[in-house]
Image (cartoon, rainbow, N blue to C red):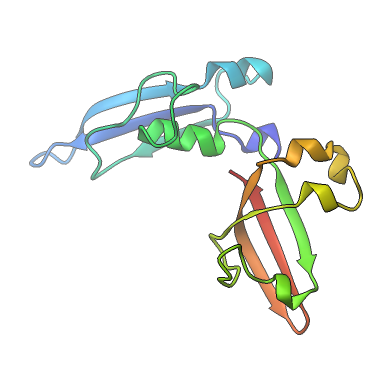
Length: 155
């Protein structure tokens, strides 16, 4: 992905007042490490999020080291707080159209690549060892006779 696609600062409004319909609380979660690494200007890569139902476990002001399952800010920082890999490929062997549990590959399926059997040995310029344990979620599928094309992003 491009640094322009990441969200390094998120203004989160939450805890809606039941009578007034206004937000009673707000937090600004900033991934300062990523902002510094990519020299992101002050007014860029910011997103406003209004949570109408979530009132707890929003996160703190710096979700950089938060576990993705601990808070809203930590979860979205893990997904969009830094650059990520996007992969497009076509699977021509119908026997490989299933995951490890033999379920059909669909949008939302988590996949891994076998870094011991990659061709070329360094896809997209990355060393094959860097793919060890790297998981992708499928974001798009196109099925046609004899092939399955997918788009996936690292998680």
